[in-house]
Length: 168
Image 1 (tube, rainbow, N blue to C red):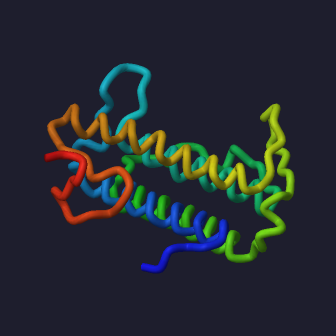
Image 2: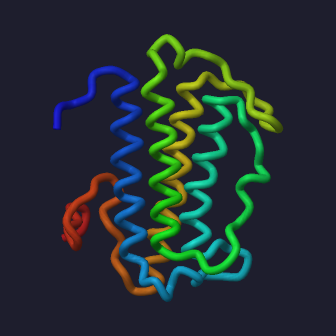
């Protein structure tokens, strides 16, 4: 894979790579463990994945289309399944990448106002925020996996199952 050379390419590469690891993490969670959580008042496995997808969709629809409607992100009714969570994660990322494809590098400096957020960041910062948000929750999911006795995938790249260059 060639190295990305411009910021938009770097953003796309990070978005795709980290989502790949998130999806790999989802596949490692046994279906019956999706409702599990480590302590009271913490998200379940399923809620963590849903939160990643919904946060991305909320911010992407807002920063690209000025559509700031949190009501569209209520928790779905019924059991959260792996297939449904995968679809939500894939759909959110597809939307973000489609919108990002319409952006030129000069637009990354455009300041975006987000309702109820006291800072005004440029578009580039909000896109990096989405990446950081996913990494944050992916780290929590890695801890959850360890608590149920599963070694999580390598955090930065999709590697074959069990390959962890950071663990000898």
